[in-house]
Every structure is written in structure tokens, then in C-alpha cells.
Length: 251
View 1 (tube, rainbow, N blue to C red):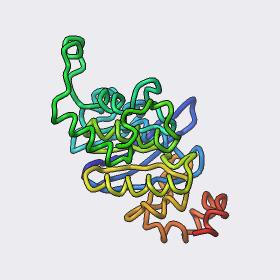
View 2 (cartoon, rainbow, N blue to C red):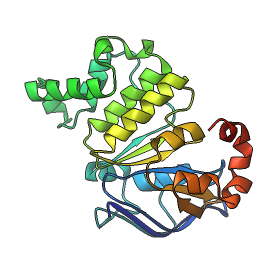
View 3 (cartoon, one colour):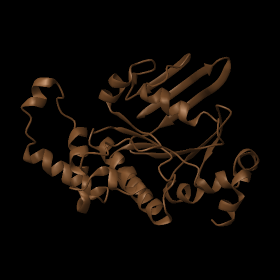
């Protein structure tokens, strides 16, 4: 298993934000996590990337315990996080954003004398093509559309060579066309990376959920299964999907 979680729990001010008895992810598996607001989805990703330290529990990444490690240490092990809101450098070009993200030495001396190798340039162009931004490499990132900024940030994470990508609500604020392209991008990336996606857009979930979907409620695992199993599970309908009835009717 790429990722194994056992008896993971964290509370904030006496409120149980997460109490997850078990979770596992295979290498190169794309898993979607859904659930109502406050279900513990983002808290779970925060723990996996080191942003939040759990009160109890075990997290094994590539068989190595990581619970409580710093964000930097976890990132170096191969876990990359993309947050819901894009956090690119708006005053730099798309190319320079990708260049800064590349996995390389970033100490002062190395930075002063740094010259990108042909191999690195080729890698940046390869990622730019994958995320659909080849034609705007020289454009200022701040001028990109919302969808393009999301793709750029995904590219920034990919350039760090993670084994596991954590993606938080990538379809939020996107047009239908951008949402579909994002889904196809994530499916392609799952050929080389494990991916965990948090999402509310059920049409998007249906597009990318080729294997299991995990449903959280009040910080606990409610159920796991295929997309069709989930959408027809009365417990899921009662706690979550019933609130998205319009989306369900259109699927």
C-alpha cells in the first residue's frame, strides 16, 4: 500500500474533527473523498501533508510513519498538496512559476549560479503540455483564467515529483469545459501518481471515480464503494447527496 491510516483522530477545542479507524490507498490509485461540510475531509488532507498534527493514530506512507512530521519533511518524502484556491506567483510567467517549482537545490549559493539544464527545460515543457499550458508559457500567471491557474498549480505540484498528490476541490469555480479537462488531466496523472481528490461536484466525481469513493460524515468513515454504490446508498443520500439532488437528477 502507498498509504495506510489506522485509528487517526484529532480534535479542535473539544470538537472531534476526525476519527478515522482505517483508510488505505494503493500506488497509482485515484480516490475521491466526498461528504458534507465539516465531515473532516480537509482535516484529513491537512494531517497527511503535515499541516495538522493528529492527537492519536498512525499514518504510513510507503511503509514509513509520517504522523506528526513537518510539512517540509513530508513533502520531501513524496506527498504534494494542491489547495482549493490557486497560490501561484501572479507577477511571474507560467514558465517561471514552473521553473521555481522544479525539484532542485534551492539554497542561496545554488540559486545565484543556477542555470536550467536542457533536461529541466524539457521536463517543464513536458508538464506544460500535460496541463494544457504550452501556448501560454510566456504569459503572466496573473492573467490566466481561473481554470488555467488551477492547472498551473497542479503542474507546480507535479514538478516536485510526488508519489502522492492531494487535490482539494479542483473543479470549484470552473466552467463545464474546464471541469472536464481537469478530470481528464487527473485520470492521466493517476497513471504515475497516487491521487486523493476532495470534491463536491458529483458529475466530476462520476467522471474520475473509476475505483472506490470514500464518504466521510462528522469525521468518520460512513461508507466506501463504487460511484454507483455510493449514489444509491441511502445513508449517503440522507447525509449528503440529498442536499445535491439537482446534481443527481442530471447524472
